Image 1 (tube, one colour):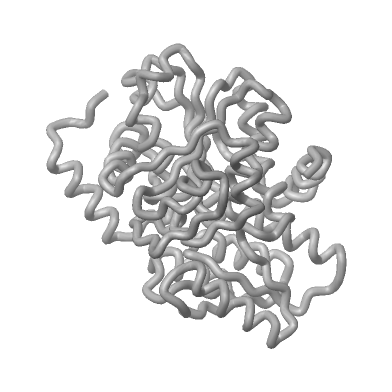
Image 2 (cartoon, one colour):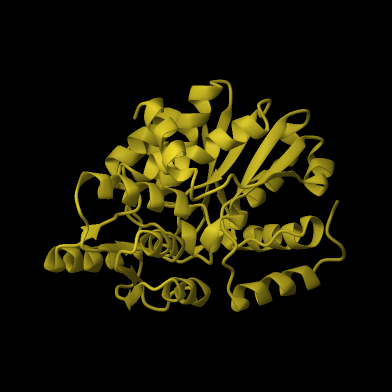
Length: 325
């Protein structure tokens, strides 16, 4: 990918997606002696960063040839991004979700006008069903994590950060299918090569973490985590090579750490995040003092939290005295 493609993506997306806010996080700065900021992608349309890549990919594909419709597979946020983009471009859309999906995300996709089909035990199973559906109908299959036009859309996020805080030293980025971290790492290091990029996965969905460590794609038997946005079981070799080349470090966070991070964001910073959206904060808090004196940006990538998980968050909070600040 050439950086000119990222600049073109910014031009394409500008009429549809204004920059999201970058805000100071005083409570996180106090516990770390760092200058900590939050990139609020939870404020994007559909409540997630995913709309950047989905809309960019559909705009690019439509320029190449007419589209009869679009099909995708998702754990939720990408599906909502595709549904939102399809509605903007007046295209029919079908979104395949694993059975028993996040109900908040499912409802959002349906409200945006896409057909919702539950199939498969996880994201990778749903992908196979979606690909078959697209072939049978002659619709465009917009595959998250593998479509090359998704990455420049995600990369526009890093451009915004470097404009909003040029002195940033470290970026914490949640990792699901790697579209986000590949785009962010590419753009951030092009603009400022000294920026350190740290990827974050869930302990119960560690496929790309282990793949990054070993330098080859290593699938896991399952990816059963409350962070459905990080629940990818089967990495691709190409994506592993790219994150090995551009990502400085990968970390894992527990389910409890993500619940705690959601609570901290809600109580201390008045920011709503889903588990995947709070993963960067969870990883940062695990070694916050290591960033003393640095400027750190934590990506809050989504806000689509279920009532059940929110209840778990509040139970986590009730087990504490007061949030440490």
